[in-house]
Image (cartoon, rainbow, N blue to C red):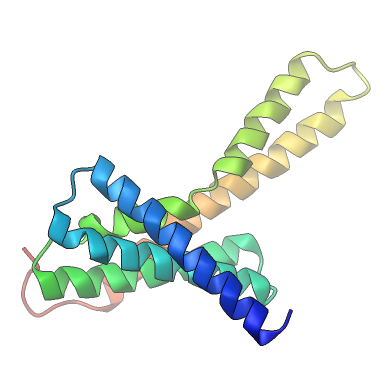
Length: 159
């Protein structure tokens, strides 16, 4: 992929993930003046994840990188705007939640109920792998949001 194509992909990714973050922020009744911050956290975090995947990182590692970016941006915005951190981090990380993996896991488990005896072990292994990947991505998101908070303590409380 050329540099221009990658830049176009990342800009589109940032736009749509930022809009998704704003949509969830509105759903959670985030005040209007903090919506641009939610957009920024979602856009930068998901773009970091997409860039990591494009550079060859596994999705679990890319999710960790994206969540760290969301955590850093969320903490900086919270300190700067005197708002709670979660106002920016929760909407910012939601576009990275592995909904497709969770859905495929549930479908694999449901296929187990109607499988023939010889198909069972393969379907069970499929469901297990999908469940483990889903759990690892969710753990990476949680860890990524926590790391910046643990590393960078502000001299005074945010709120």
